Image (cartoon, rainbow, N blue to C red; front, top):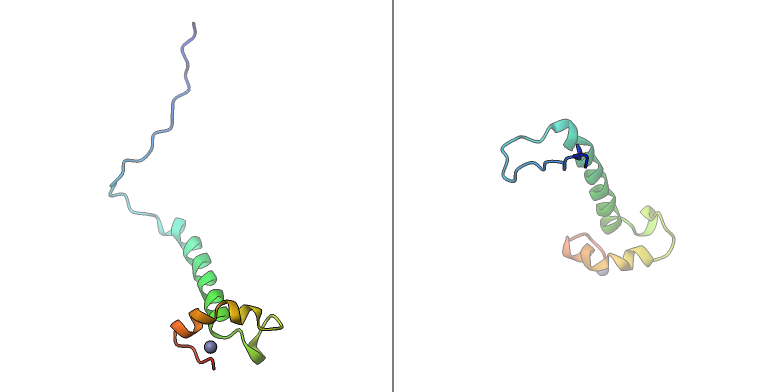
Length: 74
Ligand SMILES: [Zn+2]
């Protein structure tokens, strides 16, 4: 019987002090930052002249968040 040479990958130990490389984190930080800016736009400015979508659907959907964050509304 032949011995298998395949070994299971070794997971890094939890609690490791190895720092995360900035090059690995930066694209995700930029992506999440853009998502946050888009979400902030739809909560705070998606109404009237600045509306991207016609109608009140998006505005009504985020209406409670708009008041919670203190954006002017009605
Ligand atoms: Zn309102």
